[in-house]
Image (cartoon, rainbow, N blue to C red):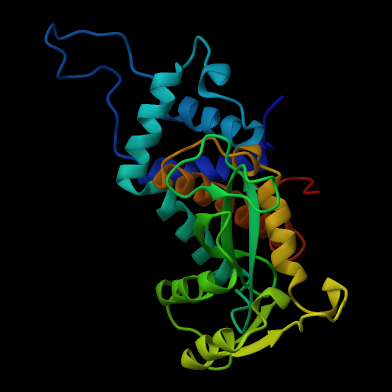
Amino acid sequence: MPVLPAWLTDPLWDQLAALLPERPAVDPAHPLGCHRPGIGDRIVFDKLLQLLRFGCSYQAIADTTCSATTIRNRRDEWIGLGVLARLKQIALESYGRILGLELDRIAVDGSITRAPGGGEVAGRSPVDRGKQGLKRSGMTDGYGIALGRVLAGANRHDSPLLAPTLDLRQDMGPLPDDITVYLDAGYDSDKTRTELAARNLRGRIAYKGEKAPIQASRRWHGERTHALQNAFHRLVRCYERRATVIEAFFDLTDTIITVRSLIRRAWTTHRWDDRPKRCP
């Protein structure tokens, strides 16, 4: 059974394949001029999806078609080429061109997950008895499409991460003149309002001590995106130690969520040749 439906993985692979350099079947630099054929990129891509979805180790996902070492080496190669980050950017551009990003409403919120192996961006978790944890400060548009994130240790407060998270907007091209940022009560401080004013942003911040359902604001779109990301077990229990690898897995996750939302929303409004017959 595939880890993701074909109507989602096939367009992802088609775009990724267009970004990858051509790989010869046999290494031409081999000293004897011969070698067994290399592992195809599509096999490694499917293995990365399984790793991302199930959260298992590289050894557990390896089999006769692809070794754990090959998965790691190809992963590092793709990270070095920047293809996963570029894939996420293409997904965002496609979504904005077809459906439009709601950039006049932005939600920013933090989420803590476990990081049992520690690593470059791990810290003592205040909600898990001081065990190693990872915090991500995520930014989404008004519908919940992930625009970017800042990684930090779980012991970092949400408020100091707001400024670097908002600065990720600089890579998104032209933005609306009037932007509203929706924040929870953890950001209710004068420092937060100063950071928003310095960027000409309007803030809708929940007040400390006043309970209100999350649906009372647009923040629930960001909370939904965190929940969708946590469905990929590689992120909710992160054993990776290098920040570049964690960022790459987040880029792949955000690409999957964006393309899935694009196909599902466009399914009722657009027609294309390989449109799935059914899109739940």
